[in-house]
Image 1 (cartoon, rainbow, N blue to C red):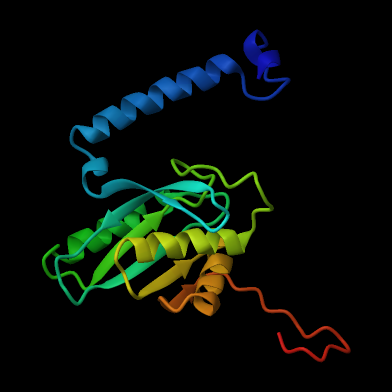
Image 2: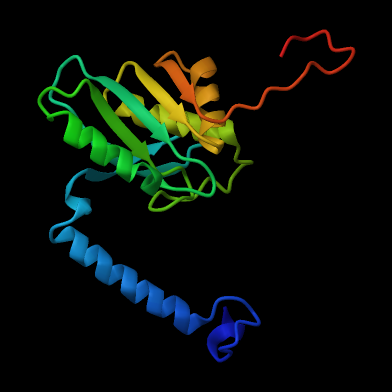
Amino acid sequence: MYENTTRLDGQYGIGRQWLMDIERHMAQQIRLEKNGGQNQLFSKIHCTFEARDDATYTVHFLALLSQNPQAVPVCLIHGWPGSFIEFLSFLDVAKSKYSQKYSPYHFIVPSLPGYAYSCGPSVKKEWNNEGIAFVMNKLMVGLGFSGYIAYGGDIGSFISRILAVSYDACKAILLNFCLMTEEPKGSTQPR
């Protein structure tokens, strides 16, 4: 970014001034939304906990919670590149369709580690989808859900599949991206 402090032609990518202008504009938009727009529709929460690698994780998530004691928790997991913002329109529809008192669902929309307002992944060990799934399950169980459904698109589909096979609390999954591969020739292990 240093090279872009004085160059305005974009030769080295995004210029510093342009980035600062966008940041100011976005901060203004966020202030406007907080005073009467979409940001008031959903609870924005940060949850901090220790994971299996002894690192502390802070996970940002949106929550659209029901007062219905029979409501089913659904974890909506975004892809890459992506963020919780992908689900704002969906949450708007759910909020307009169901009253908080009777909604059949609790919707939890986390920012994956390293995305948006969640902390970055551990630097103490290799980080992979299994680690992310561990953090997502820890979040859902930590919120008091003994069972939940995971929905995933793109990278979120990989994480959702790991949740389904590795964690008893994940009762079902819905994927909008699923790669299927053939058995390698000569393989004796089912995939």
